[in-house]
Length: 282
Image 1 (cartoon, rainbow, N blue to C red):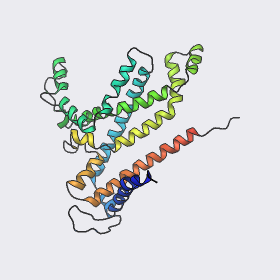
Image 2: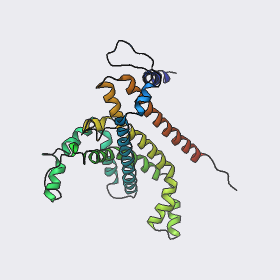
Image 3: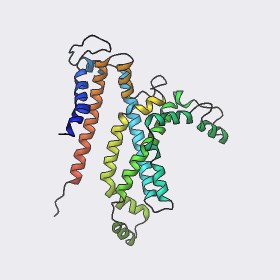
Image 4: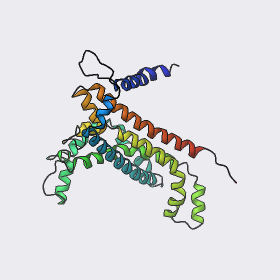
C-alpha cells in the first residue's frame, strides 16, 4: 500500500482525469466545462493536421527505432567481443543517456547551427557542400536531422540491454558451432540472433513506444517546425492544449496516444509470455 499510494496519486489519477477531459469541452481559462461525448474524437477524425502529425510520428518512430536497434546490436556485439579498452568504451556509450533531453537538444542545436555549427564546418572543409545548410529550418533536412538526434539519444539504452542479453548466451553453444565449422557470420545468424530474439523484440517494442510519444527532444530542437514538418503527435496535442487552449480536444488526442501505446504494450507482454512459456516436447 505505501508504494501504491504515490502511484495512484501521481500517475493513475491524472491519467483518469485526462481520459475524462477528452469527453468534455474543457477550454483553457473557461469558467466551466460540459460533457460532449465523442465530439472531440469526431473532430479528430477530420483533422488533417493531426493525421499529418500522426504520419510524421509514425515515420519518426519507425526510422529511429530501426536505427537504434541496428546500431545498438552492432555496438553491443563489438562491446562483447573482448576488444581492448572495452570498459572505457562501455562508459562512453552511456554518455548520451546521462544527458537530460533539453540539454541534448541545446547541444545539437549548436551542432546544426547554420553559420557556426560543427557539422557545416566539417562538410564545407571536406567539400561535401558548397554553402551552409540551415538543418533545423529546412523543409528537406529538418526531419532527417531530428531523426539522427533521436537515434543518438536512444542508442545507449538499447546497447546496454542488448549487451546484457548477449552475455547470457552460453559460450559452449558458440564453441560447439565453431567446432562444427560455422563461421562468425553463421554463428551470429544461427546461434546468437535466435537466442537474442526475445530481448530484441522487447527492446524494439519499448523503443517504438518511447519514440512515438517523444516530446522534449524534438520540442527543444525545432518546436515542430518548420511549418509542422517535425510536429509529432504529442507536439500537436501540446499546441492544442497550451497554445490554443483546447484542453478537451488535446486530452482526446492524448487518449488516442495512450490507447496506441497500451495496445503495443499488451502485444509486447503477450509475446513475451508466449516466448517464456515452456513448450511440450515429443
